[in-house]
Length: 373
Image (cartoon, rainbow, N blue to C red; front, side):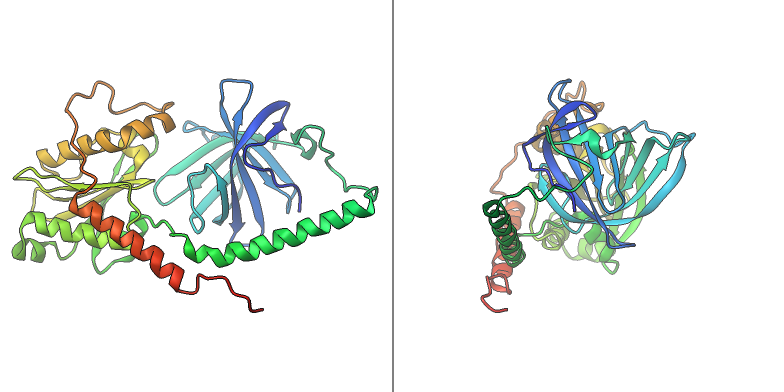
């Protein structure tokens, strides 16, 4: 196995210096091999970002950048499969356990590449080129061969000690994993609960994003036995339970004729609302969709549409404008006002309670350190 680069250190790739911002380790589900993807920020040209792919198992290395306009025209497919995120470090937008379907294309020179990643909530396109192993690494790093035996006895002992420490930390990390709350996403939860939610349609947005719409199958019964406010609140609580309370902001519209619930997580934006034909619908998308796309929720009423836009603008837009600044914003010229967000509202308090209960249950369910073999 080759070198692994640390978060924050400077490395060189194709003659340019980059700072390592994050790392993702992928496990190929077909052959069990792993490879690393490093998120890099250029030190000497406009702070542009690149991704360095390092696959020591097959001796394949590449440097690429996200490119929503990348085309496979003139390229041929060379690899396709499914991978699972096996490890993360630093600033990356995935979590351990996430899965992706990947495709890789080469041009006729077999030097340039286009990559496509199909995630649950979006498709990502990248373009780049292959590197030789001596074209990247730490400054002055020896590449392409093994180290000689010019190590002193003390150095060898020190190296063995480091290896032992790494194994101990790895063991502790696996034991402590149960103490860390695992973020769950809304969309996978809705897909799995087929007895509660049924897929209805998708709305195609900008930047190759989309929003998916689901119907809550017991909506008619809820609306017959409860007020609209109570019915939508109950569906919101079910979704909160499904994601272990891992939300960033939740609030229900308090206008007298609309009680839409908006849920913002670290990656998704979701609303629960009563449609024009009196069904309870759930629309979920990436935050990038909400940032870049100005399309009304499926079969929504006017106040629902306004709350959908106003809530995101009030609670998520400022943070996302930094992440998505290179994309067109659907809020350019926006003038429909904001909502006053109350972090002590009932649903947000409920979400916090669910999250704390989830953490507590993990710590008591085999999450402690073991002194056994």
